[in-house]
Amino acid sequence: MLKNNSFAFEQQYVCEICGEAITNPLCPVCLTTEINAWLTLYPDLRKELIPKLQKYLKRVKEDITNSTQCIKCKNKRASICPYCFTAYVLGELKKLNINKIILKEFLEFFNFRNELPIPVKKEDYHF
Image 1 (tube, rainbow, N blue to C red):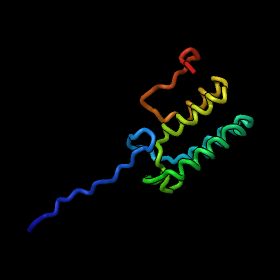
Image 2 (image 1 turned 135 degrees about the horizontal axis):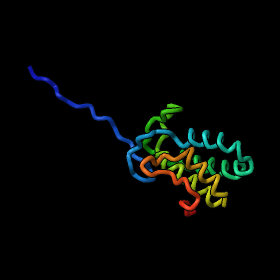
Image 3 (image 1 turned 180 degrees about the vertical axis):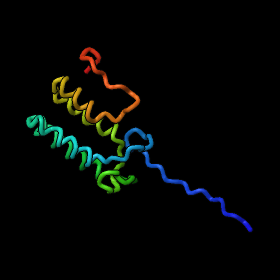
């Protein structure tokens, strides 16, 4: 009797920005919802940043070719890893010249690059 020893290989999805495997499939839409909630503390910043993120999400949605399912909303739109998306948001925050305390807070809440510690001293920031 022959035994079929086939192994089921799970498809790996890679980030469309960095090309790394998406190991934390949280889609940009869900992340934007969380960022929007955080921005309730900063209504003026919210008015400037959220339209930029919505425009970015529209571009991302048009370019999605192969995505994994988001662990929060269950939609197949996690085509960008949380690190790349939050790096984009961080860049937008820097363009808006927000203060370093808000940048630090953003990194504390949305740092998806676990291998790098978040600096805790003001002099550690080189923005």
